[in-house]
Length: 384
Image 1 (cartoon, rainbow, N blue to C red):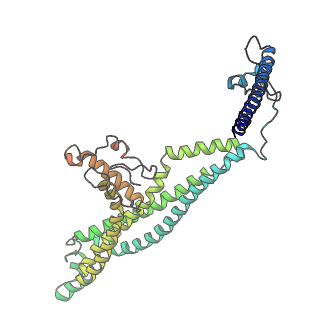
Image 2: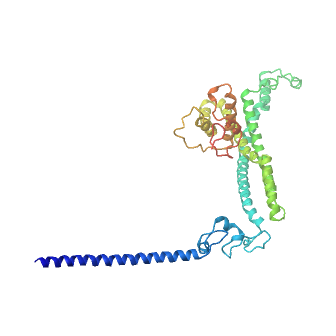
Image 3: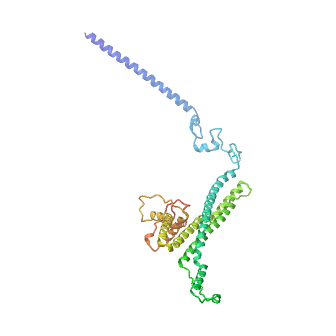
């Protein structure tokens, strides 16, 4: 029994020693292999000489990415195909040439823009000329009847003579020749209503004819503006620019905008004279006509005043801007004139009445600017 125990212990000790010896030899071999590889790598690395100037290994010099400054230096270009050209070098990759003349290409959109503007002016003037012609004919027909109230009627003289002959049996031809009868011309007086009516209608006719005259002359300006002599596209472009600047310098757009104002003024004067003309004819006729004319003039006044009123109330310092409404779309030459006039009046009153003070100090510098040449939203001057 004791022997068996000793034999088991001997096998156990021998197995442990065998495992210890085997594991120690493997680790030593592995450590030796790793050490030999590391020593070999270090010897290869140290055996290669480095660049004395830069201190960089030649293999690392080839594999490392070039610096940005060195890539821009023509003396240190890495890629053999990359070359920075000089000013004296010939064109290697020239831009493709256009099919036509470059000046003609630049001229085309400019001519189209100018043609659109001129066509709009022509269409508006021609429409105004047609309306002014018809309106002048109507006013002339009324003037033919109204101017008779400014002078005595010759039929009244004949009626007066016949009445005196019938009432006076002692009237003879000699007394008639001597002028013994009283003539109605000496007792004739003009009525104030007749004078007002004729003043309104004559001025209305003059404004209508002035619209026709100015419109016709303006069409001549446009014809000369669009007439270009036979020249190169470069010269045509220069002339177009010069003529466009001259239109603005000589206020030609403002003259075109003035034509509707003249015709509208003529129409307002005619309607005012028409109300005065119907008043002596009785209330049954004058009241309905006055109401219809009043609605027409109220529409004209509202569309003229509303844009300026909206901008004045909306952008003043005393108006709530929590909910900004849509901008008024009733833009017209008369509303622009009224808007500018309102801005000037408020500017003058702001020195007297402080409540009209506008917090923007540069607002009054823009008050006379055109409402159609800006999109800025400020206090009083320009509505958009």
